[in-house]
Length: 110
Image (spheres, rainbow, N blue to C red):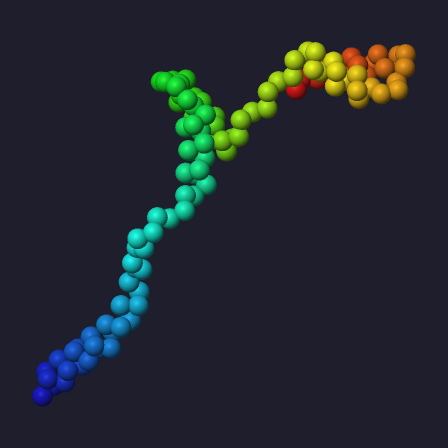
């Protein structure tokens, strides 16, 4: 009689435990494609910017591009553009003050 009680307890335990296991099952995958994550977006942008680069050039470009988030680095100013910008910033300065400002402004990289 004890064996029958043990078997009944196991069967009833399985019946009651089945819904708990069903609730912890992984959700079904939906048929709609998921939105691309930021890494996928960066990869797509960098691939487009890489263009026809091949081999080590492409590898180096992709590494740099992905680490910066796909943003293209700003173009360096030409000497003429830098001179124009510094003249504008100098404003009404005169004499030694202007000369010192222009020297410092034109010597900065950017």
